[in-house]
Length: 319
Image (cartoon, rainbow, N blue to C red; front, side, top):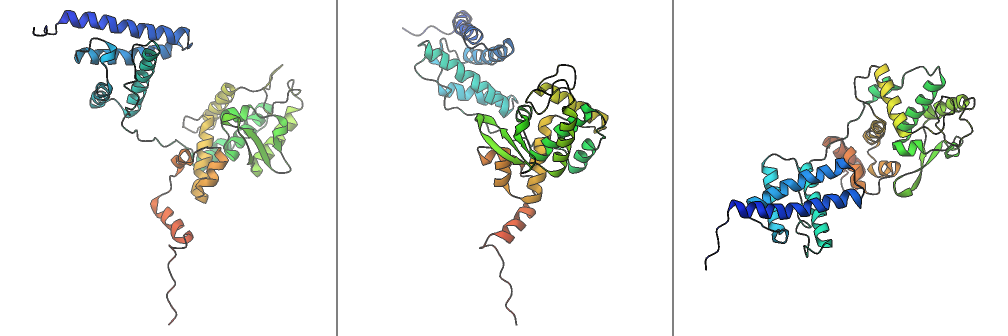
């Protein structure tokens, strides 16, 4: 007996059945995983696109979805102009949904497990050049607030701290004798960083002002300057950096992480020491640091020619 041809009724019924599993997954994200409505909505959009694709492929149940389908789904999204980064997110949603279906014993394996998006071009981090950084930091610290802000920004630029590392600092973390600061980075890993002369001077001036503030009794290095103020939070630092960027007429959207990007770029341009910059930034993988290699090829070639024993040109023999 020949198979009954596919029709719109089959498509609608299958779509409803498959949609119910998506709805269960979204409920799972909101209730068990405690995902925000915004995140759950992103999953819903991605899975709606997947369901539409499945309908076009005449799939009537999730177990029919295989790796070839997922690969074709990703390829079609790419052909429609979706960026590699967006396809990565889309495939992540598919894999998460399929893991849920495996947990519910609907699927035996994850068809999206080995499917990868096209490689996205790594965007170079935006930085301030040395003139812009000098202009941003060239203000008179004539109040407790300005003194604190100057110390914060000088330290960010001097030592390449992450924002969370900065706001977590305590008074005892700065060693003025050794000119170092001890920070705790990602993965609760500590490292000791050098602090430049200008940043040390700004910190000493801040500590003199800090002693007279209401919140001086706390161990936090950076505190608010108002009544009853305690440890300064990350959002407060972001606002102060933006405020100084406007007051100094920088004309560039400025945020605390921009100091870290600038620190790494300027140091690498001057030294060419990628491994050293990696250690200062606290990167576990040197590939993360390589994004800062803005050095032109000729400069790299000069370093190679001057440093590698097999690259050095022999001097011509004396005649």
